Image (cartoon, rainbow, N blue to C red; front, side):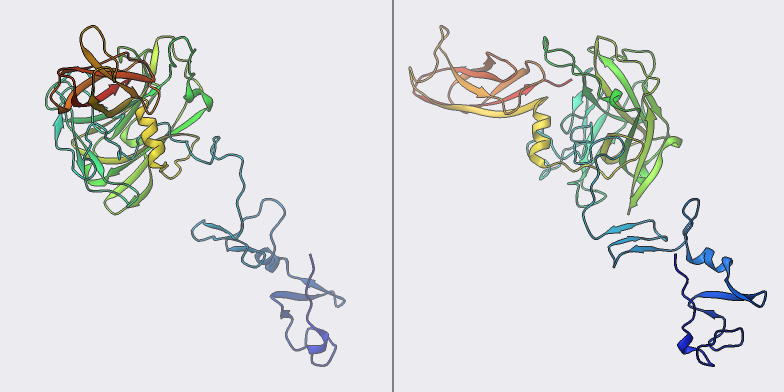
Length: 398
């Protein structure tokens, strides 16, 4: 560290630096005190505002390194770097994407509603005892409902979903939406493992319409093939008071909460997956659900649309097959059925349940057979030399 004493050539009298010289004894931002009639001492009080101690000091102003190369703004906490930032990890996980364990968290893919998002999903209530899926991978239980909405926190989202209250039953008046994260691989290939045990802390976050929030909660739990908890109690229960506001955008608020896996036991052998369930009292508009490693909610991860569709198609896929039917031109079995090959765009979690309907042509009795995780066959019966089209679905959801 160097002290910049006044320039003797600028003193009056010339080359004389004394308590009576001009400029005064305060110069160059430092006060110099003539001590014991023999020496100058730079004021240490002023140094506290100019220099930073090696350890234990606190800067209250901005810091700039180089010529605008690195700037740390004391007012807003922002850091500006002129060059690249290199980091091996962030929040205990990879920085370059695929942090979000929830698929289709922005609710933009809805294969069961092929005209969405151009055409809205109407108010729909689940009449069944099993989950009814709205947008891909997100289901509601019996008597709960959903509807697509145009409100959104930013242009990064195509819209939002309004999760609607149960019309009757033990949770009447509450809305509920859930996704189960896969844990078990294809039979005979061994367990996939528990992704939540990879790190001690996990953070869940969600964009919600601020005015709709009412006792907003989240439950994380292991579930078995009957969709019942496979251990006593949830992995995490996040109550309304546990949420922290991360950011706001107009009528929208993004909230987050962190939970620990440190004391959570490994999942039992019969565990099918990890269910992440959100709940609110009253209807609520929401979008941007995220579950990620680490104690901090990073910005919502917008994955490429092709990637997100492929992730969804592991669990549910739709398509078409068919063509002109000529005797001998396609496989013919003993029942006079003609089959058309179907190659799935994504390998399924398990051999899927499939359906088929006639989309064109005069043939009848459509169906799907020869089903595996990679392919199937669509078939129909009827006159030869006739064109035939089938629309099919393949469901391997958890």
